[in-house]
Image 1: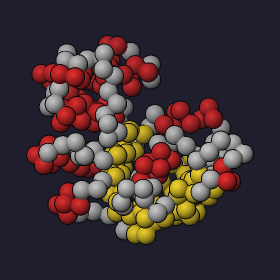
Image 2: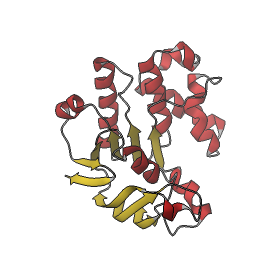
Image 3: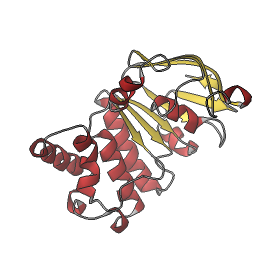
Image 4: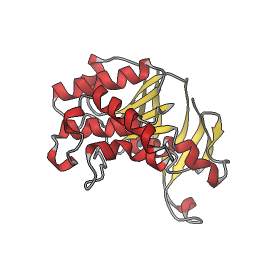
Length: 225
């Protein structure tokens, strides 16, 4: 699913990247299809930058990164959007569309992908039932609790049945009960075959749900396993 070999990343305009410090340095690791990885490390360690690479929002400035058999650095620009559509992303700040209902937020990726309205309605209805949000389908995000908004974000990320699911601090705005419910959803996706990577600072959550981890420090991989 993921193969990284000596991956480095610098931010900066084209031609100026060589002057910028590397935010990721010489990362090498593999994640098999259907695997689970915690992504750990203090603030500034490079977790969000690595998630940007894995979500194909940026390309490595050195090394080689393969996602689902596609070399991200060598791929043509037009080949990246189809790859990105096979990856679900759950953002820490939800990034829901405020003027859309819960139903329409979850349906958005399907509509952007060209799914027929008659087909997507049944899929979205079932997804909202799965995450326990059927009763708020016609509400807008501002009317929901933080936990409910996070579940909408999860539903939107997984409605396309991604092969890879990335979550950036998904429990950061949740209480312990809501965090545990979220973990059940993520682990169920993993059980169904989706590769899942969860970035978190919450070590208590990791202790309650032990699993393999990638740990970063100052842009370097210090633990893999």
